[in-house]
Image (cartoon, rainbow, N blue to C red):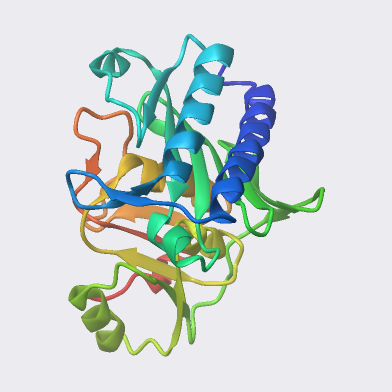
Length: 260
């Protein structure tokens, strides 16, 4: 693996992201069972099938890299590896269950704790967001790709909020800052909308996991945005504790950092 040339890796990750999306849609179109994990979060056949496909594909193609994936058993050996793929095989399982289309496939690659590649696919629409460190962020649909940038808007800003994970603290933050333009969206699509310039602010309180944020962070930052933990520290990856316990925000401009 070479940090200077991740173009080939990006193309392969885009390919398997799309294929994982097709695997998910095969389940989406039929009746499926919903199970619950130990933490009471839902999981379906689609989560497992997508996870198995992505993880086996990455391990076969890049055996020198570690893999951290939501539906795979944690391997502590990954901590010794500078390179780690971080995979959410189906981000937005609640949206998948509700069949509202707002779910994604997230694959990132981290190097020494920093996300250097991120791909987010939206299976239902066929949209793809992706970025490589230092190369910019891009949006692709129907074979057409364009570079994307965060907006320059600092007045009457637009905030994206989780459809399934609203918190009282966030509602209070919105009220305190007088934000009127609010859009409810599922999964990592929220970060993608900030990167594409269709929203300016995304704040998330509470616990998420590395695989929820790694690809999104790379895309937001390469689009010119700011991605930080709520205490303004940097989010890092391939950690011993994979829980993002401090919350995070993604914004287009320093002026739009909300007042607590």
